[in-house]
Length: 255
DNA sequence: ATGTCACCTGGTAGGTGA
Image 1 (cartoon, rainbow, N blue to C red):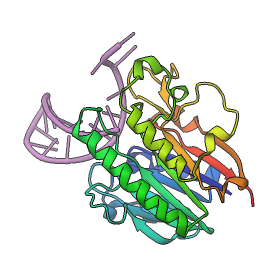
Image 2: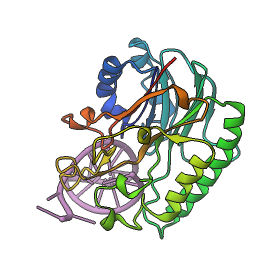
Image 3: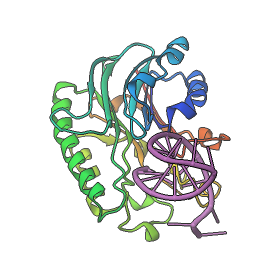
Image 4: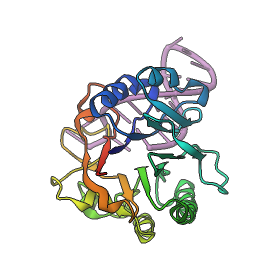
């Protein structure tokens, strides 16, 4: 089976591309970030017409997440239980026996900002909740836009980015903390093309120069790891005429 | 090269967030 994550940066703008991508790749489940839609505006009907069942959680202008699958997800959870949050960043559901957690981690803006403090608090809450989720659902995948480049090799210019947002020690420590729960970065289980990123700034001709970061991730629980067969970034949608700044990340699991 | 994009408010531009 195939699971994927994609930060679409506005589902309104990207819906035609999303429908094309779903048709071409036929994932068993896909999580979206930055839908930027209130719940009443979610394009449920258009997706249903193409055969996709959705659950979603959005807000005006910013953030917003969704989980798409051929079957409707069960035991759906929106945001982190017990963590009061005005921002729509998490959607979880069970599909084909796998607990899927789709997350849009806070950007953090700059290490000396209030938004960075919020990012750290949010990640603390996510970590604590995930520990419980893993106990309840040993077959679990956490995927989404983490807004963290875990290592220097995930950054096109690690010297320039040292200590900058996405690359601070505190953020990387949190990422390692998630691995400490027994999760594995699927992408790093395979040989990958050098300079593979999942996000390229719209500015600076960054995509043309392949100046990006790997900040979108798929983490698998230990129980799922034996089924892992492949993990790739799909750069093709980033070449679209009007692309998201992020590319989808895909994992393939065996039976 | 801070060289873009998407969204908002309240407008025919400017601010915010990424």
